[in-house]
Figure 1 (cartoon, rainbow, N blue to C red):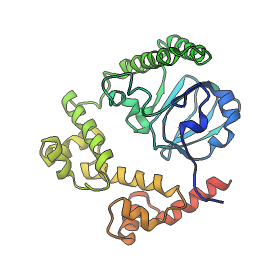
Figure 2: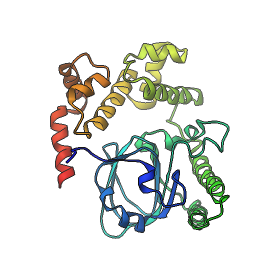
Figure 3: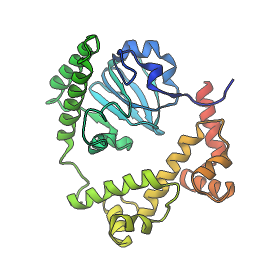
Figure 4: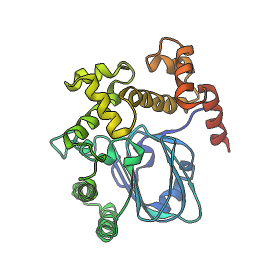
Length: 294
């Protein structure tokens, strides 16, 4: 049997008349897809709003408690798993990368929302009391739309989803790290986006500073001010995260992972990974394998 963690495409999970979108209440979704409690990845966007339940939800190896009226936003490629305590319910939406592209002029529109940044701490949101009734009402409308066979229902679902995204984003719009100007906060987000695209080939802060048209000292000061770590550490953390994501695929050798991440050899990669995570790639895999087979 092939020994790797599953990577799910939306075609494997779709129920809403279209291969690009799934809308469901969470309890029946979980009943059908019981194996999703194990670590896995998606090729699509995935969001869950819990209305009942407890336990933990792990996103990119960070644990979060499950609470009612908590919403999770996940982007393609992230690793996640659940460990629920008792009954859970709520709503789930899966949609493909291309779902909004023919609907919006800006193909990168979703990147405007902080909760789709791929940073787990930004992706887990507790709904304020002021938003709960309206957000629940919008999710109920999505359930109704998902049961409507008329072809315009897909566009209606898109508008309702955007309504949800914008409402939640507006609630968080004024947030940025204390003492960080809006300009520097924008620079920080652009730096993180550049890392996501180039982490395998560009490892030095000065390379990113040049792309941002600022000095390395400015970039370093910005990261220390906003994140309490230097720019180089931001880059190394992203490389380490990608290494963890790749290591869950047990069919890919550690040597191949080292090559994909731009390391000259396996030894250099192992030293890097141990320094970043306090464990070796081999030991990390053993731990993951224990989770998978338990």
